[in-house]
Amino acid sequence: MKALFIEDKDLKTDAFRELHNRLTKMFYEKGYEINSVEIGKRDLASCIGCFGCWIKRPGECVIDDLMSEINRCHMNSDVVIYMTPIIFGQFSSNIKNAVDRYLPNLLPFFEQVNGGTKHPFRYEKYPELMIIGYSDDITKEERDTFVDITKKNRTDINNIFICEKEENNDEIVKSISKII
Image 1 (spheres, one colour):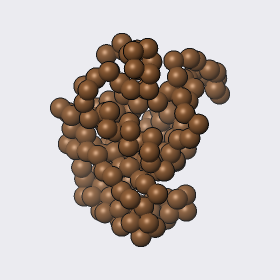
Image 2 (tube, rainbow, N blue to C red; image 1 turned 120 degrees about the horizontal axis):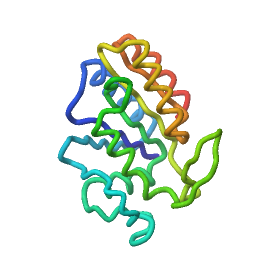
Image 3 (spheres, one colour; image 1 turned 180 degrees about the vertical axis):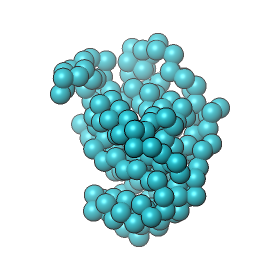
Image 4 (cartoon, rainbow, N blue to C red; image 1 turned 90 degrees about the vertical axis):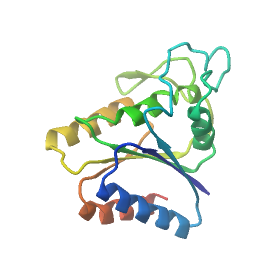
């Protein structure tokens, strides 16, 4: 079994570090092979909207950078956990860029789901997706915005966790342990 952690390289908190260590230990104890990818501002180019991932190289981004490795690891994992700081109720720009560049794993068509439009899956099997948003100082509005935006725009992510303080980590680790 394989787990992939996709993390923001630039913005980490003490609660994040402690949670990451505990999750890594738990996954190892359950027999997972773990791959962690840290994404910084200069690690990924932005999507240029060329549709090359659908037309020129179906299933692969035409931009040759770290995202090619991330997408391969993503599709070969059983569990993928995005760990992002919450910035004004949103993903960090580094993690948002990775989420946007996930597009090659989807088909270029549209389907209606729960009143919204989305791209259908390209492959039969996908990993269990989770997102952990973290912040040392978050308002209720930022928390609610983060959960709302994630649910609306990432319908394939069923498990959303918020790490505000190290005290939240026990609950998050227990919840993820039950899922995997």
